Amino acid sequence: MLIAPGRTEGHLAGFALRWKALSDALESPDFSYVALDDSGSNIPLSLSESDVEHADDDASMLIVRSMERFRPDVVVLTELRIVPYLPLVRSVAECVVVVDMHNVESHLKRQLAAADARAGHTTRYTADVLNLVRRLELLAIDLADQIWLCSKDDCQILRSAYPDRLVPLHVVPNAVSVPGSSGPAIPGTTRKVVFVGTLGYPPNERAIRFIAHELLPLLKLPDHFIVEIAGSQAPDSVRELAGLVGLKLNENFESFEEATRGAILIAPLWEGSGTRFKLLEAMAHRVPIVATRLAAEGLDVVDRKEIMFAENAEEFNVAIRAVADDLTISHRLCDRSLDLVRRQYSIPAMREKIATALRSV
Image (cartoon, rainbow, N blue to C red; front, side, top):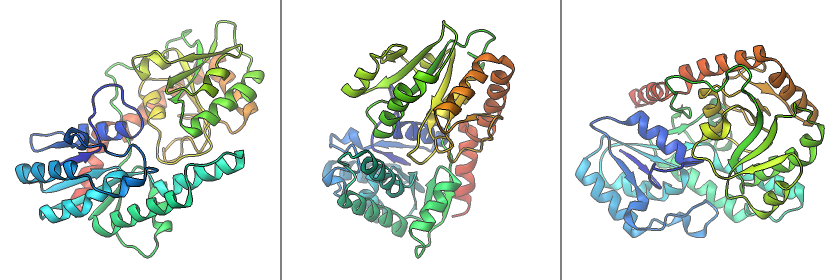
């Protein structure tokens, strides 16, 4: 049984992509998916909300009914904000209980708070929020039989954060569906540079400012190229930047594949943790990538083999030009990254990792 904050239909982003991947990997006649928002309760949208530590009565009732009806041998709770339901799950039935953390939220929140401080911004990631997140992580560590994280880096971060706690940690990487025939990377079709993401998320806002103020003035591309910001929830600050000459805002696309068709994907990110679905989706659809090392943290990629690394505007400019100007480089990146996704970050690969983890219980 997989318990998640919400359902996996429609246009998904962020954590919901993880729910979907886990659901696809676990799918079988003996599988049940429980979406807590089906209970009619208001599941907190973020770990910054004050009531995130409190289990909702309606959601609790849904969990109890679902577990009594299905009688699971294994229950996976995905995402830290539903960890308050962990004691309830423990009390309802004798079964293996797994918490899928995805990444280490306390580490991520500290990064974001530090970035806000450097920028002179008031942060939502206050000491109270950081302490709340740590309490939830400790609850998960103390009560779960296993913790799943999406990379070896995240496992090491969690071990370092709580060195006196012993709980089995397992890497269950993020995963994406690989199209049967992938390939916008056809000779001569690359025609834009694109950044994709939830545009109101602070690390993405900072990336967009970098693109507008530092990269765009340097970037010299063929006349038919455009530089595009694709995503949802664009704040006014992003809309203002999109008014600059040479920068386009795209909020109307049906899928990641549509947004990145004929594109070079860039990911100039300097904060965050976990492994980013946008990079995996790009690899699965043969979209060449230029990114910072932190953006690709946790992925088993090598510079100039599956991805081009860049850490400042000049390096991004050089790498983007290399991919745009040389089809051999573009195709080599796409071929190797697609092979990597199939081997390590596909739904079948995730299914094998889950099976290995559960066999060790």
